[in-house]
Structures are given as C-alpha cells and as structure tokens.
Length: 186
Image (cartoon, rainbow, N blue to C red; front, side, top):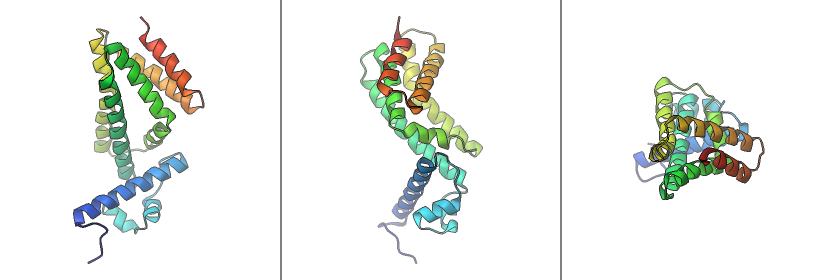
C-alpha cells in the first residue's frame, strides 16, 4: 500500500485535491488562461496523469473546482463586508467597493480566465448558483432601499465596467469612488 501524507486516506485525498486545485490556480495565473492539460497538472503536482484522473474527469472539471473555491472565497468577502454596513445605501456602496478591491487584488483575473473554459453542464449550473450568491447582498440592499430590482443590473454593469478599467490599469481608488458616486446618488 502506498504511503500517504496524512493520518487518514480521506485526509490524504483532501490534501491531494487541494494540491491539484493550487496547481491549476498557479497555471491559470501564470498563463493568463485556463487552458492546460491533465498532464500539465500532473507535472506540477508530481503525480501521474492517471492519478489526477482519480480526482477529476478532465481539466475542465478541475477548473470548475478552482472557480467554485474562488467564488466561495469572493462571496464570503462580499457578505462579510456588506453585512457590516449600517444601511441600504452603505451596503450598496460597500458591495461595489469590495468587488473593486477584489479585482484590484488580481483575483478577478483568475475568475475571468477560468470562466472561459467550457465546463460540464452540471458544473456550469453550480457556478451560476455561486454567482447569484455573490450578487445576493446587492439584491437585498437594493430591495431594502425600496428601488426596483432592475437597479441590481445597473449597479452590476457599472461595477463590471470599473473592474474592466482596473484590470486595464486604472486607479482602483478613483474607479471605486466614481462607481459608488454614480450608483448611489439620489
């Protein structure tokens, strides 16, 4: 029986799964795209290709887990920040600011690159649900402010435009101030 790096087989599987996700994340970050093979991942982690297939059916399935992990982290960040804001207007501003800070930190580029991969339908649906969870705090704030839910789409559009500008080199602080002023003015 092969040696394992953890005290139990289950813990060892989780360690390997995390190592595979970390390797995929590094490849996406360094290549600027999520196009890699199972062999690329295997080489990064020091496993055989067949060992990687024990965890993932394809590189797309692995990319889906990268997206899931990143979206969960991003959502936790947003929910934590928005929950601490005192009122609906502050919650909307905080949602925008936190998303733009996330983008400025470079992690959104990972999500964008990974999002270009054709995922299995069930995984794409899972990612869609997680994306809705990311927007939920904004939906709640807009509802609490008494505005029409269409405002959520408008705020998301402005935030996405600011993210695009930040990723193109614009100053994140200026972009956040401009986006917040535009979206929250009476």
